[in-house]
Amino acid sequence: MQSSHHGDGHNFLLESWLEFADVIESHPEVRRLLFDPVTGLPTTPLLFPRIQVLLEERNEVTLLCVNVVRYSKIEEIYGWKVFDDVMRHVARALESITGTVLRDADIIAEIMISGNSFVVVLSPPRASLRMDADSRQLVVQRVEESIRAFLGEQVEPEVFRKFGCYVGAATITHDPNARLERLVHAGLDAALHDSATREAVDAETRKRRLRDIIDAEEVRTLVHPVFDLGDMSVVGYEALSRGPEKSEFERPDKLFKVAYDADLVMRLERLCRKKAVQAADTLPEGRTIFINIEPDAVADPELREAMTGTLLANSSVTPDRIVLELTERTAISDFTTFRATLEYLRALGFSIAVDDAGAGYGSLQCLAEVHPEWLKVDISLVRNCDADEVRCSLIHSLVQFAESVGVKLIAEGIETAEELATVRELGVRYGQGFLFALPTEPFPDDSLYEHLKEL
Image (cartoon, rainbow, N blue to C red; front, side, top):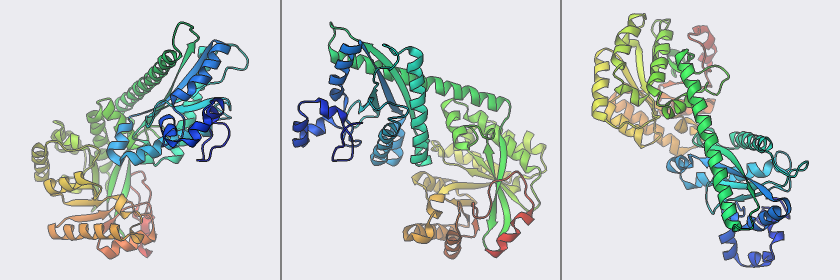
């Protein structure tokens, strides 16, 4: 918040309003009760004096609530320390827009200790006695957009995609017959409800847009080459699904996240698979194509027909040139049925790959149950492996495993010459990554990769 600078790096205007500021300063236990230990911001009780003054002077006060939603996903996947970092970033985002989107006199606090919501007490409007509904929603929209832009730059993309940040607003009016605390909490409840409404509207808009994309079949297929690291020849291509270009749905993680929320994952999966097989119709001779498949889609009753009937009947590509690459967006709940379907597809000539090896327990269990022909070393192990003995050791273990069971190993996400040299030295035979090529329209001419022979 804004005010005189405090020793711990945060500014607390409220302290200058409180007669017991010295008490807070000299009694750490009081500070722990009134200030959030993660962000250093004051909590709701310290807002009451300012709110009371505004109500008495202006007869109303407007509260903004900034609500971090789906935050439990962050704690579940990454732990509470990462969640605390997210909350610090949100606090910094609010502080960064003070004096621009927010006014210097606006006051920022947390609703409760170690919570997931912030409150902003807006200073009175300059040109009128009251804050009208249109002006209030304009502030909400600007604050929401500014926070998201800040977080998009400051938070790791994988973490940023796991949560949402929505702003709501409510205006409370002076009532001499009601306790101040009750008025404030009623206002906070109304503002949080407003933020939840914005989240619901946002979600519904995205669902409708995804349905339109699926209905219009606006999914594109790009391909990313997989190389033999010995002679840098192309052995195959991974088919990558993309939504409409330059839209929020261009990235597959956004496509599938909304699809799961909207219960559209099977329809989207079928469309992506259809587009990938259609692209494979022009696959160069001697090449393999990797087609990503969600674990849930293995149970899709249309999978067998889709892969052996209508699609392949209209394509020149044969099953022995297709690798079904199992992604790890969701956990596999029924391995018995899962294995039975995979064995049926294997009998028809398809091969199986497991993506993200080394990324967690789920991928290891998948290895044990599926017995794939191909295995992809997760990018998290490849990244900076040249400077990390632990990563090297893990990759070496996967190389030994692959050799012992006859699995072909691919290192994903190779981006530097040093990473390439390391995975080669460790015995990884195949690789793909931005060091070699970016995803492109299918299928590029081999001459495009001739310069890689020098690597």
